[in-house]
Length: 77
Image 1 (cartoon, helix red, strand yellow):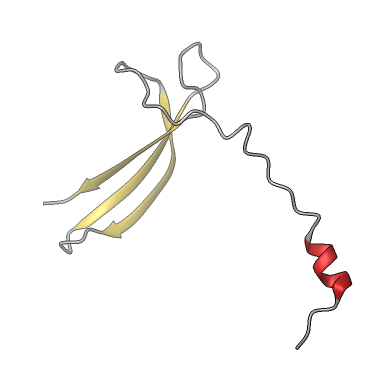
Image 2 (cartoon, one colour):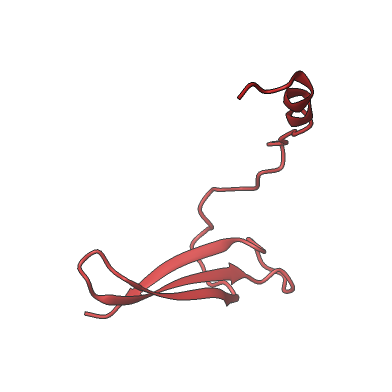
């Protein structure tokens, strides 16, 4: 099936802006107020039950790293 030229042109409207991708440097060592933004039950590579937790640094209090995500796996041994 051949793609018509106008279909190729329609795909050209997509633009990606990488100028505001955020800061991926580690947060400085310290204490941060966070909330659990996601938690999933999973299984570790060894077959042990675990909880995959995503924490989000609060941005409604004065602290560094607002809205940054932190990830942790809590594995039952």
